[in-house]
Length: 155
Image (cartoon, rainbow, N blue to C red; front, side, top):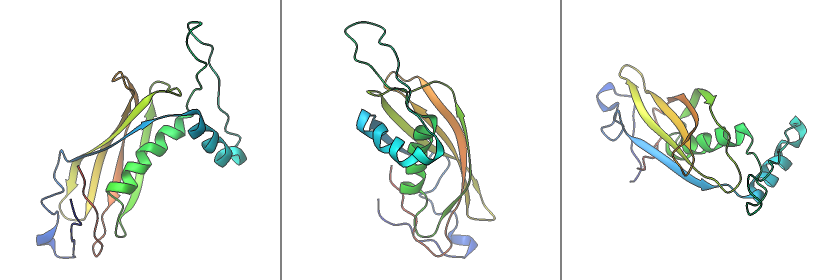
């Protein structure tokens, strides 16, 4: 979809495209090179990547994905789909439920679950699951939509 114009009149907010239940998602197969890049970026914070022992000799060694890498996937969806045209994420809450590993395909999903009608604020349910549908992360985010910008909506 294209840009959704928003202006400061109450009658134009929320635009019909932003409705409760509206979803956005990202799919990412996590490669060892992704974790190398992440570790290089976070090295100043003492972040490390843990290796796991293979559960079977035929399985390749897999790396545990740092929790905030998963949080970053949710952040990427927030930025790509909700924080355009001056919108800003006011807060984000994440609960890490299970680890992800290299080779996993993670799906980060955000869903609008509340629209504040007196102000341009959206509350989103956030989640990451792996290729087996196992919950890895759950949480929520609150977005202050821009009054003069053009937030993007994609399904």
